[in-house]
Structures are given as C-alpha cells and as structure tokens.
Image 1 (cartoon, rainbow, N blue to C red):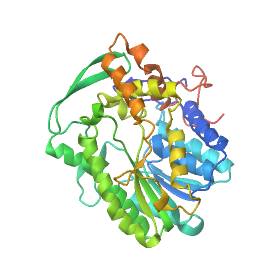
Image 2: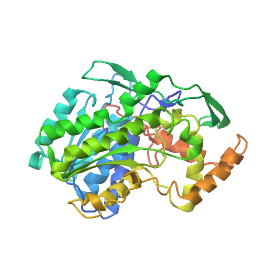
Image 3: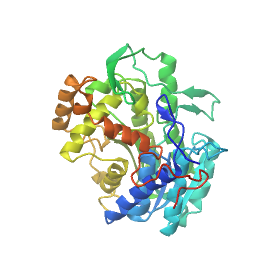
Image 4: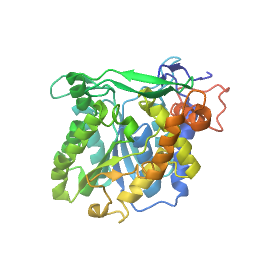
Length: 400
C-alpha cells in the first residue's frame, strides 16, 4: 500500500516502514563513520525505540560494538494500519546489528511493569557475562500503571501555581499566537511525577542489582531538560519540571545501590529537539524553531544521534572501564549535553529573534521548515531517498 502521513492534532497516526528504516540506517552510518570509541560492551536501554533511547542504542552498538537489550512499547502493523514508527525502528536496528555480528534483543511491553523488568533481567542474564555495563533510562509515556499500588497515573504538561501566557506557534499552519494554559492541580502534579519522575528508574536498577545483572563499575543515565527562561513556566517550573526534579533526587538512592560495584548514576540534561511530546507544548516548538535557525547558522546544531554519540564519548573518555569521577558535571552533578544550546551567545541570538517573531516574520526568523522536517521524519516521512509514491509492505522492517 502507499503510506502517507496522517496528522491528528500534534501526532502522526501513520508511519512509513522504509522511511523509518532509512532513518535508522543513516544513524548507524553516522556512528560507523566516526571511527568508534572504547565504551560499554553490554547495554540495556529502557525506552529504546525512538529519540534519545534509540540513538543511544545505535551509538553503543555501532560505536563500540556493544551487545544491547532494548525495552519499548510499540504496536506492530494490523490490517491496513501501519505499525508505529518505533516498531519499524527496532526491526531495522535488530537487522543491522545482526549483520554486524552484534546481539540486539528487544522486549515489547510495559516497561513500568514488574513482568517486563523480570523479562529484561532474564534477557540480560543470557548475554556474555550475564551483566550490563550501562543502563540508559529513556522512558517517556503519557500514563503509568503502578504495579505495586495498582493505581493508574496520567501525566500533563501544565504550569504550576499560575496561568501560563506566552508566544507559541502552530507548526502546521505557521501562525504565531499567544498561548494560555491553566495551572495544574495538586493531583495532576503528583500524577505527572509518578509517570515521569525517577521512581521507576530506581526500580529498574533495584531489579538488575537484586539479580546480579549489573557489572562491576556499571553506570546508568536518565534524561532531563532545563531550557531558557522563556520556557521555564511551562516546562522547568511546570509539571514536567517537578517530575525531572524527582528524577534528579533519585540519583543519590541509585548511587547507593551502585556503590558496592563502583558504579554511578547520572542525569543528562539534553538539548531541545523535535519529539512527539515537544510538538504539544506551548512555546517549545517556537523556541526550537528559533534555536535551530541560530545553531545551524553557527554550525553547532546536533541531532539525537550526534548528541548521544557525544554523550557516550564524554562518559567513556577514560575508556571501556569508565572513570566516573572524571566525567564533567555541573554544580548539581548533572551531565550538561545542552552546553552548546545554552551558550550565552546562542541564547542571546535566540532571544533577539524571539522578541521580533510574528506570523509574518516567522519564515525569515525561524527554521520552521527544519522543525517540520524533523517532525515528519520521526514517523519515517520526508526522508531523503525514499520513494513515497511506491507501494510498501507495512508488515516488513522496511529493508530494501
């Protein structure tokens, strides 16, 4: 069938198998072209099918020859309905890894559940040595069923303590307007922390530690974002920020678990990039469009794969046996992969554009075209070299 993008609100409900495959192949080719580095040899990625998690898995596999275990929650094709982009991404990654002689095992299920944790531990135990050197926690979900309490929690992206008002853009129409978002209730804040905070990250490390599935010196990384002052009310100081603060608070608990192994937990603060979630956050798409304009002009723009490759190189600068004490961190102990984004000169340029941007000036002041392309590429569309007029097999992994 011929697959075209179908946009509903802020998401695309279809995915193109060949486009997704081409995306994964391009990321793997980028990493192979860097020459590689000495790093972890067995890696578990929780939330491995898209975005930063997928990029980490690719960087570890093709950058330092790591065997990987990925955990994700994606939907295969059914009838005339395409699979989700993450499902196609994973199929292609497994194929490329097999061709390279690497193990790449995947578990499709609810990563919040104890059952999936047990499956992942079992899979890790079957790796050479039965342990992992690195655990990447890149799980992002709209809801979570807590397996210990039976409660169901849904996350929201809202300000805390007051109404948010600020510039925003509809990325599909290009209209700049003033957005207004009502503040979250106490229950919404608590639910968002339950979904996007650090409790589940801690439980993953507990499960691996209890099973003896963590190697000597094992490390773990979870992801966060801070951003500029213009986005703080809706993000860093909003419900998502509350969740990320909880994530950071868990580092001490995880460090205590890893201490007997000489391991370490980190939160990596990453650069703003186009994701399915970011498209739905007022202010953020406009900010990203302006940021892209500035950073591409300066030659400092990074995609997911470029940033995650740089992150792993930073973590493993001391070689395969990571020297965690040598990893550069900020005053709060965080790895700052947003360092290029938050460069004062970059931020000053972005804010100068922010003050002037209107619907009429948007095309000149922002890289909305680049934003849209990245958005569509999340789902396998707008990928160079893919024939979107050709019939494709939606049940395939997209490999030609």
